Image (cartoon, rainbow, N blue to C red; front, side, top):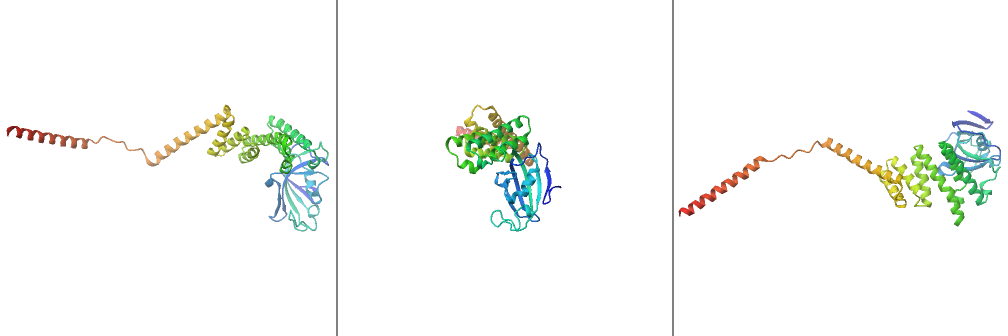
Length: 320
Protein backbone atom coordinates (compact mmCIF):
# COMPACT_ATOMS: atom_id res chain seq x y z
CA UNK A 1 0.00 0.00 0.00
CA UNK A 2 1.42 3.38 -1.04
CA UNK A 3 1.29 6.30 1.40
CA UNK A 4 0.37 9.47 -0.52
CA UNK A 5 -0.32 11.67 2.49
CA UNK A 6 -0.55 11.29 6.24
CA UNK A 7 -4.29 10.68 5.74
CA UNK A 8 -4.37 9.09 2.26
CA UNK A 9 -3.16 5.62 1.26
CA UNK A 10 -3.47 3.96 -2.15
CA UNK A 11 -3.70 0.29 -3.13
CA UNK A 12 -3.52 -0.37 -6.89
CA UNK A 13 -6.10 -2.78 -8.32
CA UNK A 14 -5.29 -2.26 -12.00
CA UNK A 15 -2.31 -0.44 -13.48
CA UNK A 16 -2.87 2.60 -15.68
CA UNK A 17 -0.83 4.09 -18.50
CA UNK A 18 0.82 7.36 -19.46
CA UNK A 19 1.49 10.32 -17.18
CA UNK A 20 -0.27 11.58 -14.08
CA UNK A 21 -2.54 14.65 -14.18
CA UNK A 22 -1.11 18.04 -13.22
CA UNK A 23 -2.70 20.56 -10.88
CA UNK A 24 -5.86 22.10 -12.37
CA UNK A 25 -6.27 19.18 -14.78
CA UNK A 26 -9.91 18.24 -15.39
CA UNK A 27 -10.16 14.58 -14.36
CA UNK A 28 -12.99 12.20 -15.22
CA UNK A 29 -13.51 9.74 -12.41
CA UNK A 30 -15.74 6.81 -11.52
CA UNK A 31 -15.87 5.79 -7.87
CA UNK A 32 -17.70 3.93 -5.14
CA UNK A 33 -17.42 5.23 -1.58
CA UNK A 34 -17.91 3.45 1.74
CA UNK A 35 -17.54 4.32 5.39
CA UNK A 36 -14.48 2.35 6.45
CA UNK A 37 -15.20 -0.75 8.51
CA UNK A 38 -18.86 -0.92 7.44
CA UNK A 39 -20.98 -1.96 4.47
CA UNK A 40 -22.47 1.54 4.21
CA UNK A 41 -21.91 2.58 0.59
CA UNK A 42 -22.96 6.20 0.24
CA UNK A 43 -22.09 6.94 -3.39
CA UNK A 44 -21.62 4.98 -6.65
CA UNK A 45 -21.09 6.77 -9.97
CA UNK A 46 -20.91 3.46 -11.87
CA UNK A 47 -24.48 2.72 -10.82
CA UNK A 48 -25.53 6.16 -12.01
CA UNK A 49 -23.57 5.58 -15.28
CA UNK A 50 -22.05 9.07 -15.13
CA UNK A 51 -18.44 9.78 -14.12
CA UNK A 52 -17.78 12.90 -12.09
CA UNK A 53 -15.56 15.77 -13.16
CA UNK A 54 -12.85 16.68 -10.68
CA UNK A 55 -10.57 19.70 -11.21
CA UNK A 56 -7.43 19.01 -9.18
CA UNK A 57 -6.76 21.78 -6.70
CA UNK A 58 -10.33 23.05 -6.99
CA UNK A 59 -12.24 20.09 -5.56
CA UNK A 60 -14.76 20.49 -2.73
CA UNK A 61 -13.38 20.30 0.80
CA UNK A 62 -14.95 16.88 1.45
CA UNK A 63 -13.25 15.56 -1.70
CA UNK A 64 -9.75 16.79 -0.90
CA UNK A 65 -8.59 13.28 0.03
CA UNK A 66 -10.08 11.90 -3.17
CA UNK A 67 -8.30 14.67 -5.10
CA UNK A 68 -4.92 13.70 -3.61
CA UNK A 69 -5.50 10.09 -4.62
CA UNK A 70 -6.63 10.92 -8.16
CA UNK A 71 -3.64 13.23 -8.63
CA UNK A 72 -1.39 10.23 -8.03
CA UNK A 73 -3.09 7.96 -10.56
CA UNK A 74 -2.66 7.36 -14.29
CA UNK A 75 -5.35 7.09 -16.97
CA UNK A 76 -7.09 3.73 -16.80
CA UNK A 77 -5.79 3.01 -13.31
CA UNK A 78 -8.14 1.57 -10.71
CA UNK A 79 -7.27 1.73 -7.02
CA UNK A 80 -8.55 1.65 -3.46
CA UNK A 81 -8.04 4.88 -1.54
CA UNK A 82 -8.12 4.93 2.26
CA UNK A 83 -8.91 8.48 3.38
CA UNK A 84 -8.91 9.79 6.94
CA UNK A 85 -11.95 11.71 8.15
CA UNK A 86 -9.96 14.95 8.25
CA UNK A 87 -9.76 14.94 4.42
CA UNK A 88 -13.29 13.61 4.01
CA UNK A 89 -16.55 14.81 5.57
CA UNK A 90 -14.81 16.01 8.71
CA UNK A 91 -15.77 16.14 12.33
CA UNK A 92 -19.48 16.72 11.70
CA UNK A 93 -20.04 14.37 8.75
CA UNK A 94 -22.98 14.87 6.38
CA UNK A 95 -26.62 14.31 7.24
CA UNK A 96 -28.03 15.18 3.82
CA UNK A 97 -26.91 13.46 0.62
CA UNK A 98 -24.55 11.73 0.86
CA UNK A 99 -25.21 10.52 4.39
CA UNK A 100 -21.85 10.14 6.17
CA UNK A 101 -21.42 9.80 9.96
CA UNK A 102 -19.22 12.23 11.93
CA UNK A 103 -15.46 11.55 11.94
CA UNK A 104 -15.85 8.69 9.44
CA UNK A 105 -12.76 7.37 7.67
CA UNK A 106 -13.57 6.55 4.05
CA UNK A 107 -12.69 3.92 1.44
CA UNK A 108 -12.96 4.77 -2.26
CA UNK A 109 -12.74 2.38 -5.17
CA UNK A 110 -11.63 4.79 -7.90
CA UNK A 111 -11.03 4.60 -11.64
CA UNK A 112 -9.36 7.52 -13.39
CA UNK A 113 -10.93 7.33 -16.83
CA UNK A 114 -8.75 10.12 -18.15
CA UNK A 115 -7.98 13.80 -17.78
CA UNK A 116 -7.69 16.96 -19.82
CA UNK A 117 -4.81 19.36 -19.20
CA UNK A 118 -5.69 21.51 -22.23
CA UNK A 119 -8.40 23.63 -20.61
CA UNK A 120 -6.32 24.31 -17.45
CA UNK A 121 -9.15 23.86 -15.00
CA UNK A 122 -12.05 25.08 -17.11
CA UNK A 123 -14.92 22.93 -15.90
CA UNK A 124 -17.68 21.65 -18.16
CA UNK A 125 -20.15 23.93 -16.43
CA UNK A 126 -18.07 26.95 -17.51
CA UNK A 127 -17.93 25.92 -21.17
CA UNK A 128 -20.28 27.07 -23.92
CA UNK A 129 -22.30 24.45 -25.78
CA UNK A 130 -19.91 24.64 -28.72
CA UNK A 131 -16.87 24.21 -26.44
CA UNK A 132 -18.32 21.12 -24.78
CA UNK A 133 -19.20 19.52 -28.10
CA UNK A 134 -15.74 20.36 -29.47
CA UNK A 135 -14.04 18.90 -26.37
CA UNK A 136 -16.11 15.73 -26.71
CA UNK A 137 -15.28 15.49 -30.41
CA UNK A 138 -11.55 15.72 -29.64
CA UNK A 139 -11.89 12.80 -27.25
CA UNK A 140 -13.86 10.81 -29.81
CA UNK A 141 -11.12 11.33 -32.43
CA UNK A 142 -8.43 10.24 -29.95
CA UNK A 143 -10.53 7.19 -29.11
CA UNK A 144 -10.78 6.29 -32.79
CA UNK A 145 -6.98 6.42 -33.09
CA UNK A 146 -6.60 4.04 -30.15
CA UNK A 147 -9.26 1.77 -31.67
CA UNK A 148 -7.32 1.57 -34.94
CA UNK A 149 -4.25 0.56 -32.92
CA UNK A 150 -6.39 -2.12 -31.18
CA UNK A 151 -5.88 -0.42 -27.81
CA UNK A 152 -9.45 -1.06 -26.76
CA UNK A 153 -9.26 -0.06 -23.08
CA UNK A 154 -7.59 3.25 -23.97
CA UNK A 155 -10.14 3.85 -26.72
CA UNK A 156 -13.04 3.27 -24.31
CA UNK A 157 -11.54 5.73 -21.82
CA UNK A 158 -11.56 8.44 -24.48
CA UNK A 159 -15.13 7.63 -25.55
CA UNK A 160 -16.32 7.67 -21.95
CA UNK A 161 -14.67 11.04 -21.37
CA UNK A 162 -16.34 12.37 -24.51
CA UNK A 163 -19.72 11.14 -23.28
CA UNK A 164 -19.06 12.77 -19.89
CA UNK A 165 -19.07 16.18 -21.59
CA UNK A 166 -22.65 15.48 -22.70
CA UNK A 167 -24.42 14.12 -19.65
CA UNK A 168 -28.19 13.93 -19.24
CA UNK A 169 -28.38 17.34 -17.56
CA UNK A 170 -26.61 18.93 -20.53
CA UNK A 171 -28.59 17.09 -23.23
CA UNK A 172 -31.88 17.95 -21.53
CA UNK A 173 -31.22 21.63 -22.17
CA UNK A 174 -30.47 21.26 -25.88
CA UNK A 175 -32.94 21.70 -28.73
CA UNK A 176 -32.81 21.91 -32.50
CA UNK A 177 -29.44 22.16 -34.19
CA UNK A 178 -27.48 22.11 -30.91
CA UNK A 179 -29.05 18.81 -29.89
CA UNK A 180 -28.33 17.40 -33.36
CA UNK A 181 -24.70 18.59 -33.10
CA UNK A 182 -24.30 16.93 -29.70
CA UNK A 183 -25.89 13.64 -30.79
CA UNK A 184 -23.64 13.57 -33.87
CA UNK A 185 -20.71 13.21 -31.44
CA UNK A 186 -22.36 11.38 -28.53
CA UNK A 187 -24.05 8.54 -30.43
CA UNK A 188 -20.90 7.43 -32.31
CA UNK A 189 -19.08 7.32 -28.96
CA UNK A 190 -21.71 4.93 -27.54
CA UNK A 191 -21.56 2.82 -30.72
CA UNK A 192 -17.76 2.71 -30.66
CA UNK A 193 -17.88 1.76 -26.98
CA UNK A 194 -20.21 -1.10 -27.94
CA UNK A 195 -17.78 -2.25 -30.65
CA UNK A 196 -14.94 -2.33 -28.10
CA UNK A 197 -17.06 -4.15 -25.52
CA UNK A 198 -18.09 -6.83 -28.04
CA UNK A 199 -14.42 -7.43 -28.87
CA UNK A 200 -13.74 -7.76 -25.13
CA UNK A 201 -16.67 -10.21 -24.71
CA UNK A 202 -18.48 -7.77 -22.40
CA UNK A 203 -21.79 -8.29 -24.16
CA UNK A 204 -24.20 -7.05 -21.47
CA UNK A 205 -22.39 -3.71 -21.36
CA UNK A 206 -22.44 -3.50 -25.17
CA UNK A 207 -26.23 -3.96 -25.14
CA UNK A 208 -26.56 -1.02 -22.71
CA UNK A 209 -24.51 1.28 -24.98
CA UNK A 210 -26.56 0.37 -28.07
CA UNK A 211 -29.84 0.81 -26.21
CA UNK A 212 -28.84 4.36 -25.24
CA UNK A 213 -28.45 5.21 -28.94
CA UNK A 214 -31.72 3.50 -29.87
CA UNK A 215 -33.58 5.53 -27.23
CA UNK A 216 -32.66 8.60 -29.32
CA UNK A 217 -32.72 7.01 -32.78
CA UNK A 218 -34.76 3.81 -33.04
CA UNK A 219 -33.77 3.26 -36.68
CA UNK A 220 -30.01 3.41 -36.10
CA UNK A 221 -28.73 0.42 -38.09
CA UNK A 222 -25.36 0.17 -36.34
CA UNK A 223 -27.00 0.18 -32.91
CA UNK A 224 -29.52 -2.50 -33.94
CA UNK A 225 -26.82 -4.63 -35.55
CA UNK A 226 -24.36 -4.43 -32.64
CA UNK A 227 -27.06 -5.02 -30.05
CA UNK A 228 -28.23 -8.02 -32.06
CA UNK A 229 -24.65 -9.29 -32.24
CA UNK A 230 -24.20 -8.98 -28.46
CA UNK A 231 -27.54 -10.69 -27.79
CA UNK A 232 -26.63 -13.50 -30.18
CA UNK A 233 -23.37 -14.07 -28.30
CA UNK A 234 -25.36 -14.32 -25.06
CA UNK A 235 -27.68 -16.92 -26.61
CA UNK A 236 -30.66 -14.54 -26.74
CA UNK A 237 -31.51 -15.84 -30.21
CA UNK A 238 -35.05 -14.55 -30.71
CA UNK A 239 -34.30 -11.08 -29.37
CA UNK A 240 -31.17 -10.93 -31.55
CA UNK A 241 -33.22 -11.95 -34.60
CA UNK A 242 -35.68 -9.12 -33.91
CA UNK A 243 -32.84 -6.58 -33.88
CA UNK A 244 -31.30 -7.98 -37.08
CA UNK A 245 -34.68 -7.95 -38.85
CA UNK A 246 -35.25 -4.31 -37.83
CA UNK A 247 -31.77 -3.44 -39.08
CA UNK A 248 -32.52 -5.26 -42.36
CA UNK A 249 -35.70 -3.21 -42.74
CA UNK A 250 -33.62 -0.01 -42.82
CA UNK A 251 -30.66 -1.51 -44.72
CA UNK A 252 -31.97 -4.48 -46.77
CA UNK A 253 -28.77 -5.05 -48.78
CA UNK A 254 -26.32 -5.01 -45.86
CA UNK A 255 -24.21 -8.17 -46.20
CA UNK A 256 -23.27 -8.36 -42.50
CA UNK A 257 -26.90 -8.23 -41.41
CA UNK A 258 -27.87 -10.92 -43.94
CA UNK A 259 -24.93 -13.03 -42.79
CA UNK A 260 -26.01 -12.85 -39.13
CA UNK A 261 -29.59 -13.79 -40.03
CA UNK A 262 -28.28 -16.72 -42.06
CA UNK A 263 -26.13 -17.84 -39.12
CA UNK A 264 -29.14 -17.73 -36.81
CA UNK A 265 -31.15 -19.83 -39.30
CA UNK A 266 -28.30 -22.37 -39.43
CA UNK A 267 -28.19 -22.46 -35.64
CA UNK A 268 -31.94 -23.11 -35.55
CA UNK A 269 -31.53 -25.98 -38.01
CA UNK A 270 -28.62 -27.46 -36.07
CA UNK A 271 -30.61 -27.19 -32.83
CA UNK A 272 -33.59 -28.94 -34.43
CA UNK A 273 -31.39 -31.81 -35.63
CA UNK A 274 -29.79 -32.09 -32.21
CA UNK A 275 -33.18 -32.23 -30.50
CA UNK A 276 -34.38 -34.79 -33.05
CA UNK A 277 -31.39 -37.03 -32.28
CA UNK A 278 -31.93 -36.53 -28.56
CA UNK A 279 -35.57 -37.61 -28.74
CA UNK A 280 -34.60 -40.56 -30.92
CA UNK A 281 -32.13 -41.64 -28.26
CA UNK A 282 -34.70 -41.25 -25.49
CA UNK A 283 -37.59 -43.13 -27.08
CA UNK A 284 -35.74 -45.48 -29.44
CA UNK A 285 -36.42 -46.05 -33.14
CA UNK A 286 -39.99 -46.10 -34.31
CA UNK A 287 -41.18 -49.71 -34.83
CA UNK A 288 -41.36 -50.75 -38.47
CA UNK A 289 -44.87 -51.46 -39.73
CA UNK A 290 -44.97 -54.94 -41.26
CA UNK A 291 -47.69 -56.33 -43.57
CA UNK A 292 -50.30 -58.23 -41.65
CA UNK A 293 -50.33 -61.54 -43.64
CA UNK A 294 -52.71 -63.23 -41.20
CA UNK A 295 -55.41 -60.65 -41.86
CA UNK A 296 -55.02 -61.12 -45.65
CA UNK A 297 -55.57 -64.88 -45.35
CA UNK A 298 -58.71 -64.38 -43.26
CA UNK A 299 -60.17 -62.00 -45.84
CA UNK A 300 -59.28 -64.37 -48.69
CA UNK A 301 -60.86 -67.32 -46.87
CA UNK A 302 -64.08 -65.36 -46.24
CA UNK A 303 -64.24 -64.41 -49.93
CA UNK A 304 -63.70 -68.03 -50.99
CA UNK A 305 -66.48 -69.33 -48.67
CA UNK A 306 -68.89 -66.67 -50.00
CA UNK A 307 -68.05 -67.68 -53.58
CA UNK A 308 -68.71 -71.37 -52.89
CA UNK A 309 -72.04 -70.57 -51.21
CA UNK A 310 -73.05 -68.47 -54.22
CA UNK A 311 -72.18 -71.25 -56.64
CA UNK A 312 -74.13 -73.81 -54.56
CA UNK A 313 -77.26 -71.61 -54.60
CA UNK A 314 -77.00 -71.17 -58.37
CA UNK A 315 -76.61 -74.91 -58.86
CA UNK A 316 -79.73 -75.65 -56.76
CA UNK A 317 -81.85 -73.17 -58.70
CA UNK A 318 -80.77 -74.70 -61.98
CA UNK A 319 -81.81 -78.21 -60.88
CA UNK A 320 -85.21 -76.98 -59.68
